[in-house]
Image 1 (tube, protein in one colour):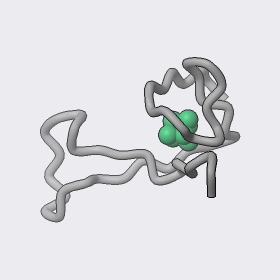
Image 2 (cartoon, protein in one colour; image 1 turned 90 degrees about the horizontal axis):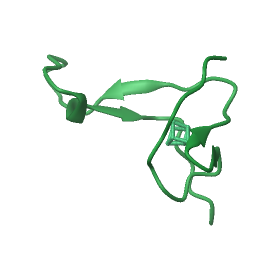
Image 3 (cartoon, helix red, strand yellow; image 1 turned 45 degrees about the horizontal axis):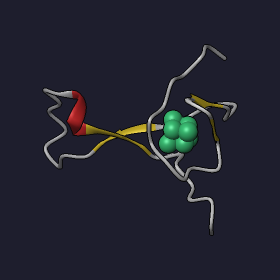
Image 4 (cartoon, protein in one colour; image 1 turned 135 degrees about the vertical axis):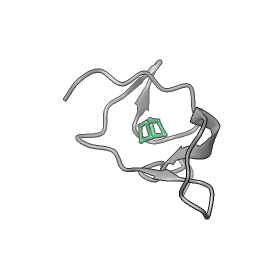
Length: 51
Ligand code: SF4
């Protein structure tokens, strides 16, 4: 898998500044599905460390 740098804290897949998941799913965060900025996307693979 290519290197993925991630600045989301407290994810079980994060090691330092990189994501170590075998794959990730990214989804839109807006309901009309028209994405115009990176803020309109989110990582669905995120899993909190303390769950
Ligand atoms: S799974 Fe998503 S949120 Fe978690 S480290 Fe990887 S890219 Fe970041």
